Length: 550
Ligand SMILES: Cc1ncc(C[n+]2csc(CCOP(=O)(O)OP(=O)(O)O)c2C)c(N)n1
Image (cartoon, rainbow, N blue to C red; front, side, top):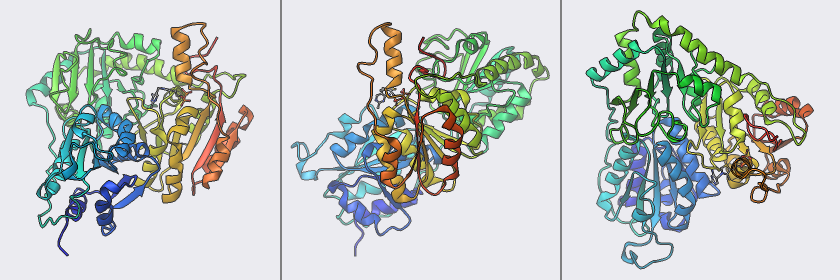
């Protein structure tokens, strides 16, 4: 039997270390699913919604620092996946998505489910690669992985017309391009070392591009020897131990005022492997855009990004790990201890902020109590995922994250990521504890992927904060239009989520009262052989970890 395009693509995926792919099947790429069934080294996970499948691929990309892979059908299939592409694009997460297309002879006719992908995907992918000749197929895969994993990482689409898969393709597999790591220029490292040595009150922010093996250990050494406060950025909490005395406070969205006020006394910001976003910069106010109010050093592996919004004093296009190593090799300045007071001051504010001081609520449980209880059970190598919503503020305030654990979420804040990312975490790293936090809003956006967890043997714990509303939006409504009926567009009528879980074959636990919290959470953590849903009836008055309705 001669080699077909489908088989060549399967071999090319294998050559790129692909062992797991997420899909919802479609008639537009039957040839590929057929060829994959002969390749027993690639596991094809069939999901319930393309949004779920694509979020799983995003999570896989983040966990492996290799592009995660999803396959979806043309038009409608891809449309469902767009939310996750948007996340991968903003969050700089490597991902390759294979998309079916109508037959080549029908291009442009508005054939069934046809879509012009170059138009549709222009602002949510790094590149759209169309495969219109068999000879291009393997090269397209190699290029897709290379682009997805290089520079500012992100999603790349490969378009595969329905009629190409069975064509003969006696071509060799195009081998993976070697990974290219940009490094710092020695003179830039010297300048950074000089700026850091002179700084009395530096801040070091660490973000998404901090990926290399052993990098968190090297970062800790740098922080200790140079006496530097380290702040993980929005939804990247595992880069630095939250209980380390040099932890400089979490640089998340809306940093609490006492911490932000202190940070604003800084005389240098070093953004290390952080792209710098709206969320991290407190809506472009710190550092102020485009001209920072304080000297800024921006380290990011892509020249298009450094200087795009902010004008840094020093821009370094580099893998941040190389910068950390360069500073370690240069050695700490003799007077680094002069910063001890600055570091201790930041850390004292952070420690006070994360100390549980929640009070009971009368309209449901204060979610702080549940999160603090979960903190007691969280494993040293736990995988924690979070959906978007106010419930997540409790996680970032009260869970003591540290290196060795993993945190997966849509950093840009798309709802629906929490559950599928938990499934992907469980499948990539079997045996590890997986805890997913979602609101009652997000739970019914992609919670159906609990069926995928059941089918493939993942056992996440899904903690649902049911405050019977799209709470975040209710809060924003009330802040912007005080006294107006904020509930009109935010109220939700929910199912019994514990019963819902049981209908899938998962375990369901209900926590209605604060007296049930400790036993309910203990029961959830004692079960490890199947998914568990913990339905927590939470307070809407306790709007977030920082705000309570008066
Ligand atoms: C896909 C998507 N749709 C809408 C939004 C806007 N949004 C942000 S938070 C939120 C409400 C979240 O509600 P819930 O999951 O119940 O969590 P809560 O805020 O109540 O804790 C909405 C609708 C979003 N971020 N993503």
